[in-house]
Image (cartoon, rainbow, N blue to C red; front, side, top):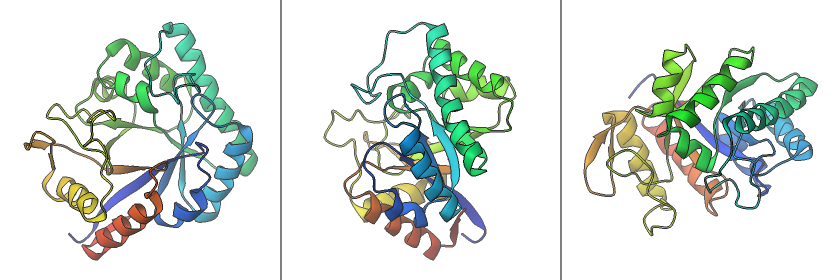
Length: 246
């Protein structure tokens, strides 16, 4: 697969403090900016690491819910959600300005990411935040999602994302973390999962079907206990198959 280029991204600044170990093997990162995790101190630390390793920086806003790590849907008004997301992003932008680093993208976290993928009201709030930020930034979104369609209709630059360490259902939603087969933690299984999506534009689902999918960036969760090993192995195997990480 000569000349194929993909992006590997990781959610960072979430309290694991392992970013220095996998920064050499990734091409973009999503920095928690206070909603589910993180503060100005952690943002500064991770931005400096990303700058050192020339890793593209994205904001990783969430429902404002540190108690549940942003992994539970919240009852919140559209106005309050708009303000929360925008404030989280602007906190990171302030840190980026200090370090003379550009904001590359936005990637939602956890329950907010999943809800925006299927709920037009939530997706519209995110789109309005994107329109309010006077920067040429991308939005990482799942393929064939509500937020992807709405963003495209509003002229927002999107990048399709898939998950390297998560299994999928037939409707392209992620298998719930409450299910035993939600996570992919085997190195060979992860490579095969990602390589199939890149080479055939299909994903093997937990229901044993093959469903069409498009992805240009692949996420490995930084809080996975094997994250460093998985990311390093994935990068090495993809490059052996002529796929560049950039």
